[in-house]
Each structure stands twice: as structure tokens, then as C-alpha cells.
Amino acid sequence: ISLNHDTLAYLSKGGVQLSEFNSSMTCWFTLAETDKVLKNVVEMARQGFSLSHNRLKEHVDGVCQAQLEDSFLESGVGKNWTQHFVEKHSDHI
Image (cartoon, rainbow, N blue to C red):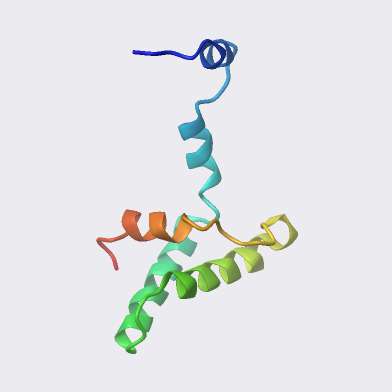
């Protein structure tokens, strides 16, 4: 196993692992808002609109912008965010 000395020094001083940091940053909204997004996806499918990453991103960006206002990123959620969301919630969609 190859270990990076700088990473070990950083972690030994109380630093946070990148995976932990990333998981804390990907939660843009609450569980209630997640439920709303999932319900919207299901309702759109019932009306015959297929799920696309672009459509999901637009909806999520709108929810986050309404909730977080100026503290939400201007560019919206990241380009892989919708893929991760779909994978995480695939049992509901």
C-alpha cells in the first residue's frame, strides 16, 4: 500500500478526508425537499415525460435557488450531481 506523506500529515492534524468533505457538500437540500424532487420525477413520468438529467438539474436548481437564494451556486448543481442522485434514489424512481 502506498501512502502519501502529506495526506497522512494533514489527517493527523485533524484534517477531513476528501470523501467525507464531498459527502457533506452534496446535500443541497433537506430530506423533505428530496421527497418533493422524487415525487416530481414520478409525477412527470406518470404524465409521460421521461427523466433526463437536464430536466432533473433544472428542477433541482430551481428548488435550491428558491431555498438558498444567493448562497446557492450560480451554475447550479454539478455536472455529476444528477447521476449520483438517480443512482442513490433509483429504488424510488
